[in-house]
Image (cartoon, rainbow, N blue to C red):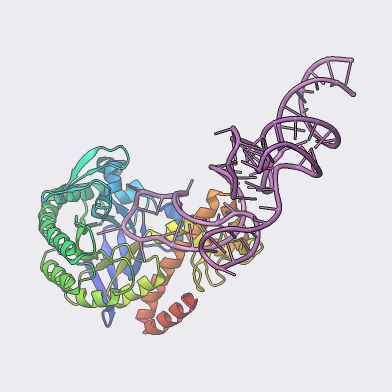
Length: 373
RNA sequence: GCUGGAAUCGUCUAGUGGCAAUGACAAGAGACUGUAAAUCUCUCGGCUUCGGCCUUCGUAGGUUCGAGUCCUACUUCCAGCA
């Protein structure tokens, strides 16, 4: 069982520490997206430098390339990519269900590789086997995404996700015995709560999953902060308190992090910060800025005066503007350092504010300034 | 000097007489949330009551209902010959 110590509570919010074989994660924490075993444009030295504590890779991508066997051969995910810290893997469900030709059956999902068109059948069992072989500390259960936002599709997907979850749990326990017998470290399973925007479905999903022997929960199918607090207020009180909760895919908008943490989420992952960085959109305390805009050509100030990342400490907006205009990769690197540092820091500050009881003040001040436009 | 060839939007470029004119780049702006994303979208002569109107293809004329496209002259550039 994953050890998770809760140090402080404030309503649904908690401050805690997750203990994984690759180290501790102080929560709430922002987990970097390392989909293909890299946080795009960044080295793991840079990730450590900006105080990232954990990263999340994707089973779908790593299953196709380089294959889980190779990662096992390389010592497991954290060692293979020389991160050596705590890691998560997403199950691949989200990716597979966003491919064009997916055929769904009770057995699993048949899909075609986006790389070479090769056909595969991904099942809950195969996802578990692949994730164990990849060797991240925390795995997500293989879930089905709804075809649409309709209640009908949402309920169907949720019920299938629950049936698959019991298979994930069985396979996970079988693999756990097998791996631990070989003297390999523990790996943990998170169930994924579904139900979309329907609170009664969310409740049903949380109740079903709460009694299962899983180590934590991913909260899936959330796409905007709208309605998120109501959803979390429904879900989180049902989930066992001592198990961590990961808000899947949220964190591009800073408000997501505040709402998520306030209503009981412990970790977050999101591709937004690094993707936006590569496309020239940078976070500042005064809101988002597009560094490619002409107005930055002669701006010799840092991206954000109040930021202490390597980018802001050493480079100017005018320089980044230039790098983006001539499409130099260093621009994307510096922007990624900044954005990733920004969201990691916001969550770290949320943690500190919860510890010293100033969360509401911090939230109010931050959001007023960031979203003042 | 002679003989050919060429001049189109910031740049390069398409353009059978019906054309405000092709494509690329550049430029300007926007989007991006469990990453098929260093990607994608929009604008890119001016004005507009969104129906159009006006000004454009080196310059000046001409032919024609109509010319970036044909003719004449000039200007500039390129190539070859002197």
